[in-house]
Amino acid sequence: MTELIPLWLFGAVCIFLLFGYPVAFSLAGTALIFAGLGSMMGTFDPVFLEALPNRLFGIIRNETLIAVPLFVLMGVLLEKSKLAEKLLDSMAMLFGTLRGGLGISVILVGMLLAASTGIVGATVVTMGMISLPTMLRRGYDPSLAAGTICATGTLGQIIPPSIALVLLGDVMSNAFQKAQLEMGIFSPKTVSVGDLFVGALIPGLLLVVAYILYVAIVAWLQPHKAPAVPKDELLAGSTEPVYILLIKGLVPPLTLILAVLGSILTGIATPTEAAGVGAFGAAILALASGRLNLTTLKEVVYSTTRVTSMVFLILIGASLFSLVFRGFGGEELIHNFFSQLPGGVFSAMLIVMLVMFLLGFILDFIEITFVVVPIVAPVLLAMGLDPVWLGIMMAINLQTSFLTPPFGFALFYLRGVAPPELKTQSIYKGVVPFILIQVAMLVLLAIYPELATWLPSVIYGD
Image 1 (spheres, rainbow, N blue to C red):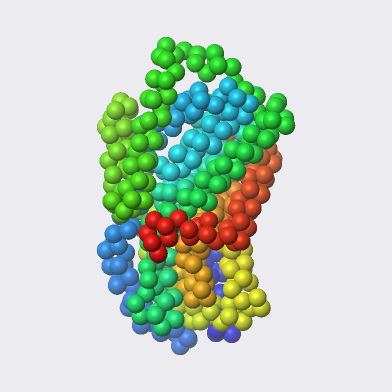
Image 2 (tube, helix red, strand yellow):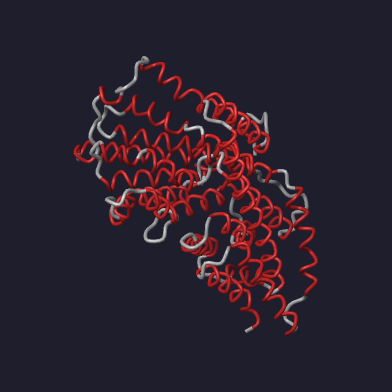
């Protein structure tokens, strides 16, 4: 029975989380309890815990993780400067006079906002507060409006420069090197956050196109669900020409996002350096908008510090958890289980994706990235899977999980800011077509891994 202790450890963490205890303390506390009991029973060697200081020092020295607070700062600055509202107004001027045009505008703005913030909750809440009342007022079907906003908000999981991809890229890099060393390859190849950014571009853009096509088809077949907005209403209260309004609303954020992504794709800057450029550019835009004062700056700094502290505290707790998990032989247990599965790597990958999908109901992407991925990724990579493809598959899988009723995080975020007249049933109904689109993307990626691996090989020559 002692060989099953790693599973009990994992189950105990899930139970504590269901009771509402903070993730970081649940991970670290449960690990320490099991380590103490295991030491007394002679089933755990305390020497494993001596590696913790080195791990924490490695976290402090990790330059890749510096991108996290910088990208968070960039997103919060753009949110506080109300650039998202200007973006939506500008996109509505371009597409609003078409049937379904307002929905298409929301998808495009959500894509840009996802690329700016990289956080699912921030995108869903912002778009819910800005666009949901407008869509309902313009006569949009409540389910279609809610589904569009929720699905667009989850793009923050996959559209670079996503914080999820930064964290996943760092963990995947360590897992890939570990897998190669276990395979006897002592000059291992590397995979970087930049590889994941580039690999996510085509799947992410395909999802955006699929969302737009769905909204356009609904508007064409059922015009009453996505009516056009009269041009006079779109320009009501504005004295400036349309092209001036479009330039003011579209050019600044687009320039910033292209500068960040372009510097990464061309190799001019690392993701961390590009994050610094993005944070500085967002500060300039916030100043230019006239909305950055001392009060707003305090809110921005507080929000950035809170999110960053949460990320790194979870990372510390996950480091302790993984050490104890390894000390109880958890890695060997997972490896033996996967190697004995009928169907080989296909069955192993299917089970991992299913487990991660279900865990997405109770854990955020940060916890899953720091706890689950380091356990399963080395085993899967040792079976021959491509690290970029595996990372993108995991990211889209979690994106789908966050959208799936009844526990999807995106649904809770929208419910929190939606007006009372929007029923929860309407939100659930609205996301179903978008879930099917994302599942179709997962199947497409499984059949054609080149959708994720081709562009990085062309740009970086791997």
